[in-house]
Length: 390
View 1: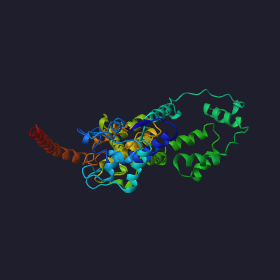
View 2 (view 1 turned 135 degrees about the vertical axis):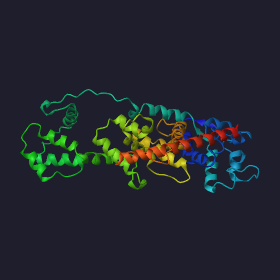
View 3 (view 1 turned 30 degrees about the vertical axis):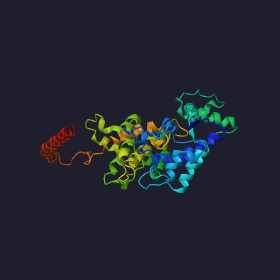
View 4 (view 1 turned 180 degrees about the vertical axis):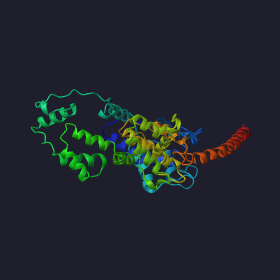
């Protein structure tokens, strides 16, 4: 019989061997026919859960630990019995893959049991999963240098190392740094001259306000988010609409929660006249597409969303519970189901204002009755199909 392994010594190495060499093979070659989602798993054997692996199937226990020659699993993958060959249909494993199964059985066929719980317990206490707390502002010796609480943290660290803050930059250096940082472009000679000549106390604040109001601000900082979203202008003829949406969101100072919500579910929001927000869905519909493999496309979307919004590699749980983070495979496929039930329309929505309102109104007057006829036809076809199945 198989057993759940404790997290120590050789068993820990055996569990690592299982996760690295055995579980990926089970996921790629066996889960399709032997999984908990099937109405009836073939041979009564479930291989996508620890319970299923421990129990075995209709033919009995899957493994005799320590003895490959007496194990049904090894007998099946070796193709030595015409009545027991797995995977079927000529998809025989390679010699190296069969050898991995044999090694695993000789090791005692360890499975992640207690070890998984320990990893998850450690993950729950990891600093990155703790609520954000407001720390106490440290006390510093040179209070005159501190202009904000952030300065106090910086100065406290410097003082603890016996260091002093750098001298203030001159005005030419300051405007150059600020302009490059905020809009990614150098200041013009006229802007530098005007700032140097401005002796007012809020001279630098006025420079910052001007830069933040520049359309180049969104172009400069929106690029970082476009990298998170795996944006590419070559993705589709209308990919630019998502790029423009992101730039506009930065320039309009769109609240972060609205920014995320529009990219995840703009089509479910009451947008009113703000139809341009629908372009935010390019966060989901852009990225890589895999022809004839919707699962890989969805996996890429899960990866983009969870890395971008949670800083977690959730896609690792596609084949096995995450080794380090508290993300079980069942959560991955629950999220997979959400994306699988969300389909991009064949005809993209109109985002902008038509340059000829009269012509557009005429178009709508002709389009609406045709659309109604089409919808009625589809509903009738679906009803007839349901009647036939019933």
